[in-house]
Amino acid sequence: MDELRDLFRRAADHAADYRRSLPDRPVGPPVDQAALTRAFAVPLPAAPTPPEQVLAELVAAAEPGLVATAGPRYFGFVVGGASPAATAADMLAAGWDQIAFNPVTSPAAVAAETAAGAWLKDLLGIPATASVGFVTGGQAANTAGLAAARHRVLADAGWDVERRGLVGAPPVRVLAGAERHATVDRSLRLLGLGTDAVREVPAGPQGAIDPDALAAALREAGPGPIIVCLQAGNVNTGACDELRRACDLVHWHGGWVHVDGAFGLWAAASPATRHLVDGLEAADSWACDGHKWLNLPYDTAFAFCARPDVHAAAMSYAAAYLVGSGGVPAGADLTAESSRRARGFAVWAGLRELGRDGVADLVERCCALARRFADGLTSAGFEVANEVVLNQVLVGFGDDARTDRVVAAAQADGTCWVGGTTWRGRRLMRISVSNATTTEADVDRSVAALVRLAHDVSEGLVY
Ligand SMILES: *Cc1c(COP(=O)(O)O)cnc(C)c1O
Image (cartoon, protein in one colour):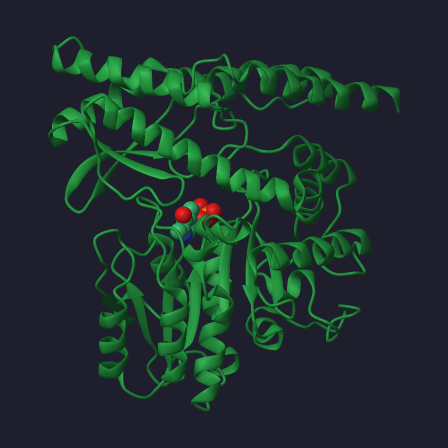
């Protein structure tokens, strides 16, 4: 038994040493992917290997290819870190090896999800009666929310989609903003609705849906099953749809509103940004990530549904051997997985660690640091191309080619990591401030590096 203790301690020591190195190590160092692959691709031995040796080999093989996404100067995509308590709880979840299937397989895992789910609804302003499925990401949360939507709009048309499938079903129309996240389309494909079902609603300059265009699209769609996908937090600009007005419009037409709020829904947790998602409680389903802005470990996200019965009707399954099925929907009744990791432990621990004020502070600090980025780069003469309403900043460094060169130079430099994006036909640098450990000094150091690299690019020193 002491050997197991020693093994787990060693793993924890490696993780802690790595975390401690994050503020100082280059972010996203240049990697020889072929060498990394070779380091892992040793022949599978016929005989067993002692666990300590396996751990040492794993650390040696993986270390050169780790990206400091959990560190304070990773500003790519929308990537958060992972808080100490949540990470430790996630290690325990692995140690305990619980199956969050239902209260029979793990009473503790289900209780943690129930408690954490209630906290999440409270923080986000989602009705306390809503159901919460603990899923793997915004993608899976969109799929669960849209599955519930599909169930309800077809049931209203007299069609049992779970039993009969979609062949011969009344057509379902899906209205979604032109700047929706690509995962929405994949969810629609997986649900058999298909991307041809989408009527794209034009978006305004920041990427939020145009409410007048939505009203017109709803009128044009006429009666029949209709699902509307709204968005809180555009991945490029951070813009949020006008949820209150849009929900009113859609409900007047008898439709279902799903809100993809993978990171933007967290605007609700701070009085300073809450107005951006005003009216969110009126929606029917919501997708939100834990592993992005809430700084929980991967893979953690939430599928909320205002109608637990509809949520369970779309997602649950029953089998004779499943003791407890048919009771209050829990665990696997609300997600597409059967056997499932106990994600609730890390969620509970992360929220307990931050507290209500800590979550609000996290949101406010990231928004303030995003504005600091924007101010620093504007003062240096570069163009901020979006209204910085949340934690996302788009920057132009001249023409498309020059901006791409600055992005590439920044990625090679390693002071910070930023990505490129195409927004409204232009190549731009995208900066997302989503990590709880990022400081003003991290932003200033990153701005200085970007300004230096932009000048190097102009001077032809970097291509
Ligand atoms: C990140 C994101 C998703 C996908 O979330 P995953 O956690 O990567 O599955 C969906 N929608 C929006 C708006 C996002 O930002």
